[in-house]
Length: 254
Image 1 (cartoon, helix red, strand yellow):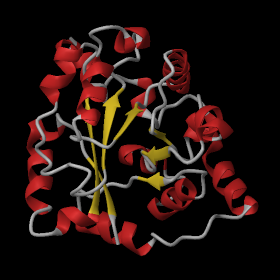
Image 2: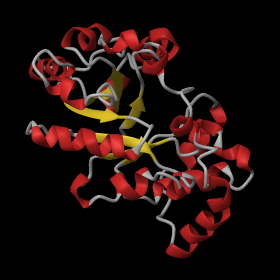
Image 3: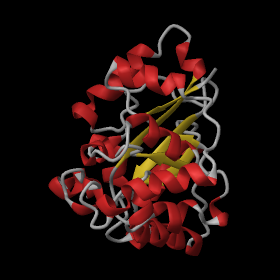
Image 4: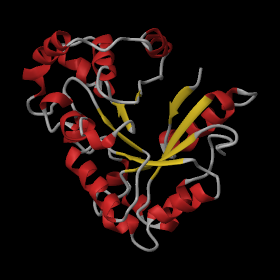
C-alpha cells in the first residue's frame, strides 16, 4: 500500500525532509507518494528552496508531488511572469525531478480562488490544490464551501488541518476522531493527518477505511461546532500570522 507523505523545505529547518529521506531508504521509497513544498515568487528564490532532501524523487522511483506553498498569494501574477517561481517548478518537472505541481495555503479561500484564476489565465493547470478542511472551516470563511466543493476541482483536492493543528480540540466541542471522520467525508482525494506521535499515527491507520458520514452525522457535528466557529477563534492559521512562515521571513519569497 502506498503512503502519502507531506513535508516542506523549512519544517524543522530542513531536518524533516532529511529524516524522511533516510526513512524511505531500502525500498520504502517505491511505496511512498512524497509531497514537499517550496516558497519563492522568483525563479531564483524558488530553486534555492528545492534541495531534494527527501531522497530520490524521480518519477521512475515513485510518484512525487511538489507543491508551491502559497508563494503567490500576495501577487499570483508575479509567480507566473517571466522569471517567476513557476518557471523553476516547470523546469524541474521537465527535467524529471518532480512529477506533479500543485499549491497549498491556509489563509483564505479567496486567495486559493485567485491563484486558480491566475493559473487559468496563463493556461496552466495545477495538479493538486491543498487546503484546510475541518468542522470549524465549514462555518467561517470556508475553504470547503468555496474551493473544495467546486466541481471544477475534480480529484485534485487535498485536505489538511483536520483538527486545526490541535487548536480545534481546545474548543471542547469535538473529539479528534470526529474531526478526522468529518474531513474524510468531504470530496477530497487525500486527507493529511498529523504524525508527530505514535498515537496520531495509529489513529490515522485505524481510520483509513472510514465510510463517508451520513448527512445526519455531518449535521450533528456542524451543530456542535457552530457557536465556537463563528469568529475563527479556533482556526489560527486563518486569523493569525503564527502559521505564516513567509510573513515572518519575507526574504524567502524573493
